[in-house]
Amino acid sequence: MYLYDTEGSFEVALFGGSKHRYPDRTTVTLTHTPCGADMRWDVLEERWERAVLCSAGDGIEVREFVTFHEFYEQGMTRHFRCRAPTFLHPPTTDAGSSFGGRCASPDAAAEIAGTVVGVEDMTVAGRPVASLRVRTEETLTGAVQGWRRSEIWFARSNGLMLKRVSRTQARASTPGGPTDYTEKFTMSISALDPLR
Image (tube, rainbow, N blue to C red; front, side, top):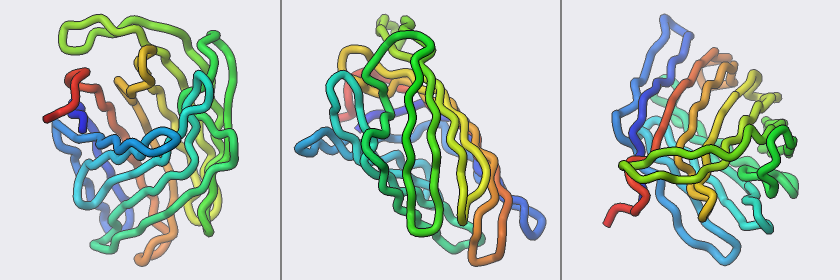
């Protein structure tokens, strides 16, 4: 389990709206699997997500992911399966290279277009870390319509996510009816060593 300094919120617009501010610290739990790892990000009781990741040469593929949001005290889980290859971490470090993929649930889909920004040095807990920075844009269709844009920095040594900046603007089918929502957050790893 890794600790991330976090800043962000999740806001819905229906019935006067409501806003969940994210805590200053959130956790990412990595559970090793035969092909890579399960990664779970826990934010609030009302918000978490999980991804099944597999090593693919010098890249990391997303095989499936699950999102959980709570709208008006009603939890909604969507389980997406991804077409191979859909990369979270592309197999190249060449700046300007593109990658992409598609993930779909029974009622929604995400088309992903990514670009490699390049290799950068980051500082984590006072230590220099070589990282790969990528930018992705997801087009959301079906029961969730809108977009999500992210920038992610991965450690070059092992693919560990060091930082993620993300913004989502979408309309989702919920028990309360079609609901516009916005999510924005920045998460940065606090230390390179996992919590004990």
